[in-house]
Image (cartoon, rainbow, N blue to C red; front, side):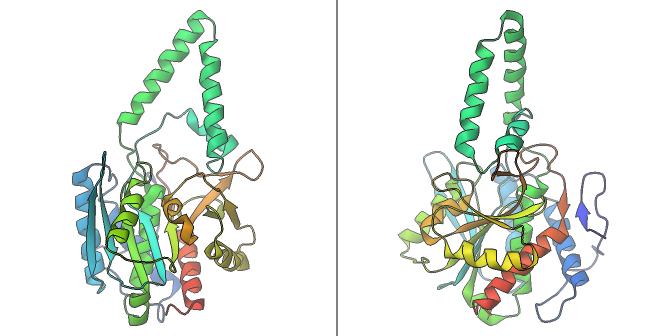
Length: 340
């Protein structure tokens, strides 16, 4: 049975929430144990569906710190104030990591629903083309005849009021990525070698033009930390979608290595180079070959992919089997690189 969550089918396989977090390790854990642990952590994260305002973020971070602490990790907050936004990143303390796992924990505002059809045609992996098409759409609206223009302009204007509202559920974007990161951290908690070689970072303000990742990079540089040799993977939207997609922004041996592992079981997995077009926090660390790991659907445009129903009220589904598949393969990648 697929384990997935939705607004109407809340939890097909419900753990006993009266118990503490289920203990598991890589050496002794069945598939059921791992899915049960994922379900249990997710039940805790569901208490923080919106993480847009400072108070919402602080409440979530306290929960995350308690989880890391219960697994024996030492953490620290990296708070940095920018010209517009202040970011609070949370990392585990690892001096010389060989792997850095990122997941942004902030959640988005809502977007007008009429944008989704354009996304499904042109895809998130073609952001420049998508932007041009949207501009052309607005240009065409201007030339509509009188009353039709007025009605269309009013409806479009009203739709943009949605951008004043926080998105309500955010199961896939990016509770799924946070869940994947925490799942990997828990599975490595009893392996001292791994805890010295794998750093976990919950990144703030990805939805604010990747500001949190920029602040994270700046904080590391100010401290003289050099993680250039680490393999950096960012988990985002790994809970729903048809096809595993790895995004790189330029050369990336990390993407090539991870793709080979993905394709052993899922040959349809893809590695996409978005060049100078940012989509996720991995872009900030592109010089280190950082990658985004996600599930996407094929867009109508050839060789283009999109993430379904994010930034909308329909982001209310989560498939734990998909998250587990991603985390299993990332753990296999770490193992092959002698991280544990």
